Structures are given as C-alpha cells and as structure tokens.
Length: 181
Image 1 (cartoon, rainbow, N blue to C red):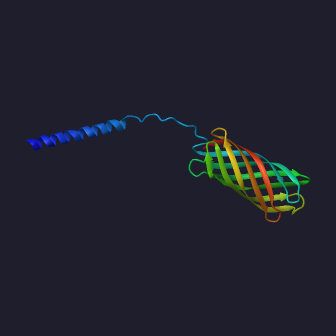
Image 2: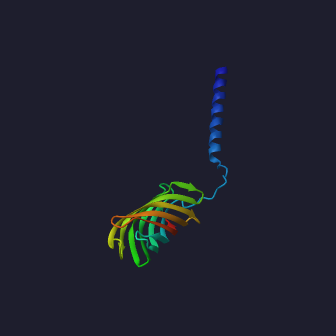
Image 3: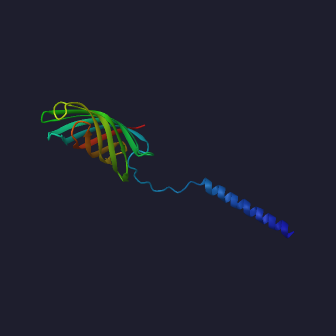
C-alpha cells in the first residue's frame, strides 16, 4: 500500500509542477523601462545635402555643395553607401565630382556615430593643375548625430587622391533626411 501512496504523491507533485510552469509561462513579463533608441531599427534611405570647403593642390580655396542618395542599415550591418555628386569652385577653379561612397559605423554612443568613409569617383577640373577628367579615391572620417529617427547631421573630413591631380583635404557639414524602408 505504501508503494501506491508514493506513486500517487509523485504523480500529484509532477502534475502540480507542470501546471505551475504552464501558468507562469502564460503571464506576461513585467514591463521593462524603455530607453530612447537613437537612429532607426530598420534600413534607411537617405537624401544628403552637404556644404564643403577645401584647399586645392594649387592653393585655390574651394567652396561647394554636394548631394547624395544613400542606403544605410544601422539595425544589422552598421554600414551603407550610395551615389554622390558635388561642385566646388573658387579662385577661377571649378571641380565637378561624382561617384560612389561607403561608410561603416565603428562607434555608437547614444545619438553619436563615428564612421570611416571611403569614396571612388570621377572629377572634372576647369583649369590647372591637371585640367580635364580624372579619377578620384577618398578616405576620411564622418562624425554624425541623430536628431530624430530619420534626421542626422554630420561633420566629415577627408583626404582626396586624384589619379593625376594633387591630393587635397576637404571638410564639410552634411544633413541627412531619411525614410525607413
């Protein structure tokens, strides 16, 4: 008789444990306090406008504007890129550029993002040094701040290497307006 009693007690204990596990799984977890998430949790399609300043290889001080169409994935890959074009002029020189750019976020601290940027493109120069069409490789750094989920403002500094023309430094201020895809 004691063996039957032990089996019944064991079975009852297992049933109670199983019922408790089912009930606890069905109750919702406590609401955690949420924190502000900077930037999108999806892929963003940006239109970017920039104002730039640079000193050309011959000492000409150039000022200009740039426009870019980029896709950026901050949720999974922390990288993006797109097509860009810019026009800079000053001291009789005018440089028109177009190409492809790429950046990879290395640091996320609240709304701040730091990313190296790379570009490959073509440029056309009006006058010396090296007038005409030329290739271009650019490397630099982008420091950006999320203002909202789809608005970002950034500062960038880069070094541009022309295939025939002299190298030059460029700085700029960029405003990115995006839509979540």
